[in-house]
Image (cartoon, rainbow, N blue to C red):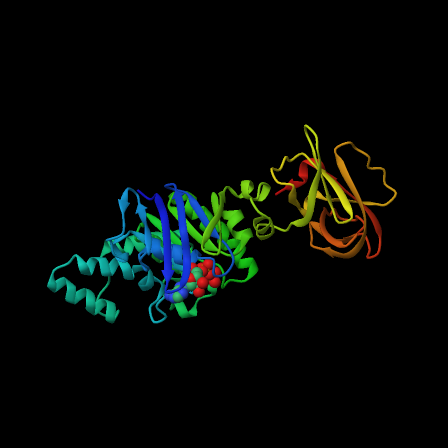
Length: 376
Ligand code: ATP
């Protein structure tokens, strides 16, 4: 059983409150991301689950077992770290086989123990038993490392080392796989392909996976659900689309994707619409906030950019006038920084080849659908 339940978890390091009353309910087979800025408590949460830290308060259950009195090596959690933590003097096979050998060692009699010790210390002293060899080769094939089986891990690329680390965790068939910023040391392109590899393996094996990252794109593209953390607290839990479309705060809206945040005050409430006025603009939204002072959140892709003389009248639309400050071509989109009164708004326009990119200084009309203005 690989579900993980965390009830009222608090962790203090002297006067630092690293975790404040965390509650999480992670389903068996789920890919769950802990997302948040540096120092928000992601790693501490992970280390409490793994058994490397003792909670100050609260309880953790893996499956239906409370793990308080279960040591780290008996919790059936596999761990993959940012730093890989491989043995540089062992080859790929030996790194992956290591934990299986140790398990064998713990379960064997004194004579077999001597043989296993000798083999671990010096590879000339015999081959591993067939069942270990088969299991290791199977998992190496799975992570596409068969050609590198005899290479020292110090002779592998970062992506290959990370796959060894993954294989080493998976070979133990853990109930829960814990991954702490596993892709941070890889370059952009490799990170992208490793995301797909990890997701594919996780889905094939159906293994409950908890993935720590400060990279929102990573969390959003890989996880079934995401917990956003800040200052030791979980501030929102949801599917990536939930969190992106309905962020609970401006902090989350900014952390998960890019957002334009405008401060304003409600000046009119109609049945289907709220009108909000800020410094130099008035916008309508279909949201019905409880508060009067609100943050208006507008995603860059929800601002349409037109040349000033375009007719864009539509009863659901908000319009604003502005001027292009910067145009950045990003391949499939063009990102415009646009001056509107005292604000700089960011708008993303899809780019198709041959289209004109608006130049710096161009006067523009911005259109924002009232359905797309969130009020928080
Ligand atoms: P990062 O993304 O930078 O790794 P994080 O979100 O994983 O950060 P944690 O490593 O969990 O954050 O740290 C949470 C808080 O607890 C931080 O303020 C950190 O300084 C503090 N902390 C973590 N470990 C210890 C420790 N062993 N002793 C004292 N304070 C600690």
